[in-house]
Image (tube, rainbow, N blue to C red; front, top):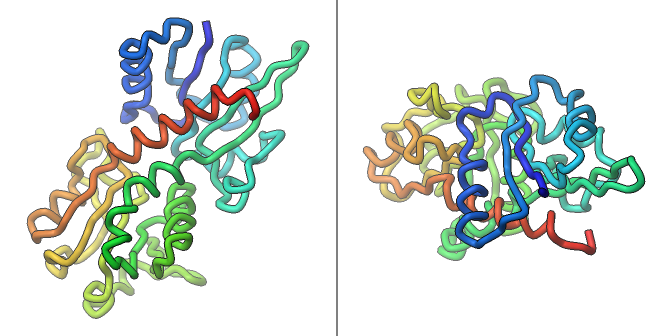
Length: 250
């Protein structure tokens, strides 16, 4: 039996196990299973792989997408440029293993945003500065979209929520939440924006997919915004991860 799974902590919000379990059943993939591995410390990674000899690949989620890089033997160029890995391929040889890191979030983000960027989107606000934010910014820059990054505290090239003025909101077409705010079970959370400044010309995209309509997106809907849930990204990046795990050339 080939095993795959998800590392991160906590994992109660994740739909990945459900997605892959349903995929295996629907497609008649009988030699594989997918499990959650909620590790509380990234230093537990190699022990996990050692005690699970059938483990062939892992997805990586909050808070380890950047921390995991130091444990990898090979990092794909794109993932290295971003500084974030969410897919690990495990190649085993003579009792040892080689860990290779990739970023399938790029595929998920690109496939989600392509339609909107084609419609002359030119300025986006990215909320959060973690591993997912790095992937989002990488994709937006490739698409030629100008970025304003926001975090709780300002620093070089990053503004704080306190620095967001009405004229900046008026110039933004797309706002992307890359933080875990609003994720199950703390579903009331949302980024500290003045939502009254939003309107029908704004697009809100939340990488959180559980719940599908987060408090962030619900606040945008009340203002007439277009909203994009995180489910399409989840599905796209999961399919790309499956391709990586099964590519014999990687």
